[in-house]
Picture 1 (tube, rainbow, N blue to C red):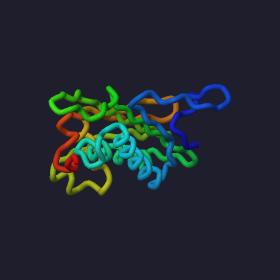
Picture 2 (cartoon, helix red, strand yellow):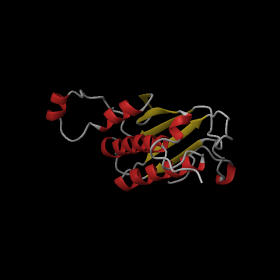
Picture 3 (cartoon, helix red, strand yellow):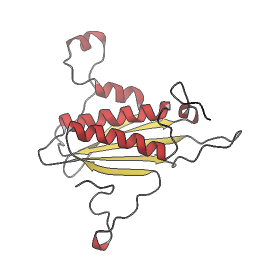
Length: 182
């Protein structure tokens, strides 16, 4: 059931409605492979939208998408059910501005929906003492909390959606990871 639009977003005869500008969504198998593929497609779509692969913004959004999809696979997996990823950038990123022009900030929103509504993410204590006694799981949400402007959980009829937002400031489109322009 992979496709860029969820069920119900079709025209008669199965034709897909085009996604609004700055929107990417797709169902993925609830597996490590599905989570890895989702992260890669997020990076690809960001590059298509003008957010360079090697920019701080692309790295940050990819890390957030990776954590949310990994959590959906680890904690939200129901056999036979996929997870759904939706990425939006508002306003949609514009091509690189001409010299001297100002680029407007963009907010990227990542939503990952899974089928287990009873297993809600919780931010655990992150003091050094608590971390020493914590098992290996539970640290990804600390990264989400640190990188995202805001995050939360929304209930669905079946399951939940964990979402976060990342402010893409024009200066973060460059940064130490950006390639020099030719």
